[in-house]
Image 1: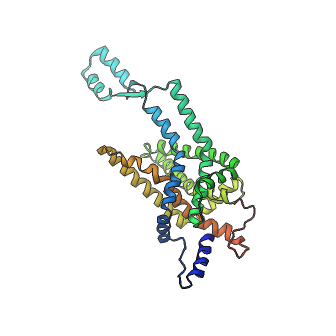
Image 2: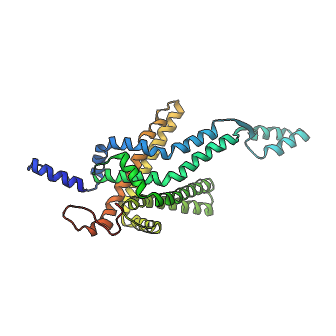
Image 3: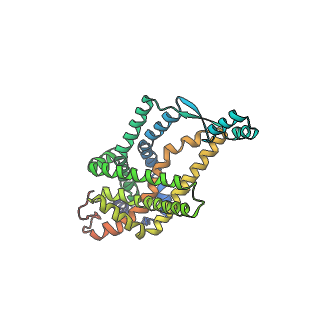
Length: 319
């Protein structure tokens, strides 16, 4: 909050009777700061959306192209054989129940190449894009001046190697956890699978919370990936109250947008489908940074403050 304190010092000289603004990172100040930084966040979102556009393109290429018809259920073939062999009325009824047709996309060479390029671009740039976004989000949360484009690429240059390596690890963990959650959810009626589903879901929420801290620490300190993960795990406990509020806020925003999209699709209204591309990623990032940075500042930056200029000086500081 160094720039805000400097601003207050300036206001004291210009307006000695001005009251100091309370910048304590409370829920009330969150909405005040969110309103102030709304314009910057909308611009930042246009940069962050590059994280998902290649994946959207890959999905569109996969689903909207040449298709081939196939049956929906595997039992269709034996039922058809039984019907042809004996003409059973029961077999005919079952064919009507299990004979639904599906149009399966045909993966031609060209489509495979486009999908592979889009996925490869996402894998390579995932960490860099998160690093650049985290640097800008940290500036907005601290109240510093943010030059979005130049700061974005400055942070990437400063964390080029680690951003690449951790980005690959980060995306791999996200994909594995998401796949496990979707795999165990339909099977969660049984005790064993239900237990596995609960465990995987808990791990997913834990890693989501750890991500609040990993990228902010990466752009602030010179730490190994192991120490980033270790510290992030500690911060999930040290900042438990703020973490819970942030997770609930993220879930609320995501669910609200999902409901709006489903409603829009049901009535043929496409605006709710398009709007999240203009604000969603930056808003979610702002929520997580607002929750994480005060804890990082309290436990990793404030203990090493040594100057009267409110400059944060830490061992092996990256920025």
